[in-house]
Image (tube, rainbow, N blue to C red; front, top):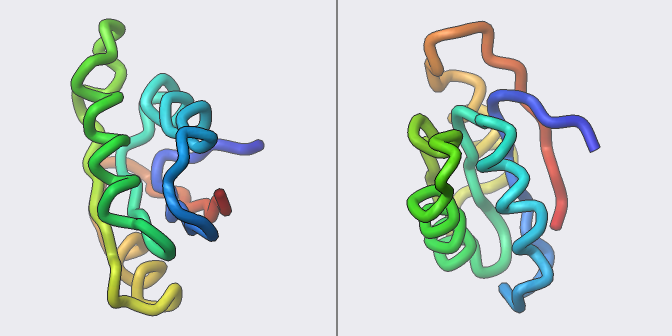
Length: 96
């Protein structure tokens, strides 16, 4: 799986803990922006924030998260593309 500094995380199911690995990896990879959309987006964003806050490496210190419960994928992609992360922002979509 390729990680970029901006990620749209498209959830296909309710949070059940099986997503923890990818959420923790996004924190460890020093991702700048994660926009969560799809099923249970707000709770998955909360879990991502929790992992970032409890990560001892400091990698999650600059992570910005958003949840988009009522937006279309196209709207979330437009938001992520327009979001300035202070560097060349490459975007990827990851389905979970």
